[in-house]
Image (cartoon, rainbow, N blue to C red; front, side, top):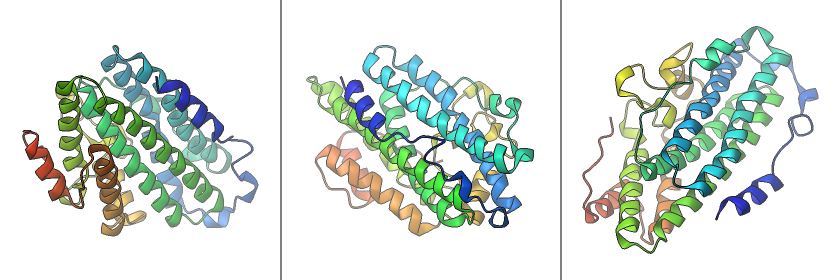
Length: 284
């Protein structure tokens, strides 16, 4: 089981909201209304770990090890929402999310192949790590800069934990099951490393997850401002091609190590995917 080791590892580096956040360094003159509003939107987005956890537990009922790990992931992701809400409570209480706004992002996700979902969330954590690092650079107020740096480190550790479960999936004795895992990881990898080709941000909270609710079946569609994410990325923190390249390269690097091949580009990964006999995923 991976859960006991992951618990010990993540517990040893867990930060404390009272002791590790430099609340006393707050400088009101360096927090703009625009920046404060984006903090609210990120707090609500992070709350979506709740329906994601419900999805993971439902779709992985046969995997108690991974399901136990969800107790860590869920706790730490909800803590991200909580620290952002606490920041607003202290410094901009007028922008604190309402309980209704938080609850609105909790809805049922359709069942999906667990291995593809695992890979999707690995890529999502890699992307969030880079988004939050970029956000820390954009913000000018010292406390929120520190918070985004701390949260970004959590997201990187979560990506590493998901990668451990991906490695486990490839180490099974059944060649058929290992091949299924390779196909799933390569398929989603091609999609998630090609975000520069898509009009929307490729992250689990921005993908359609409930056919009956389409097109209002993404977490972002349930936000008070459904279009905020693209505006935040493109016009506020300016997550440009350089940052996007870093995300793509991180995904390709980890898949290279995972698969025992070298993927220097999405094209390399796509060729590998084709060698496994997989239909190409659509980037839209």
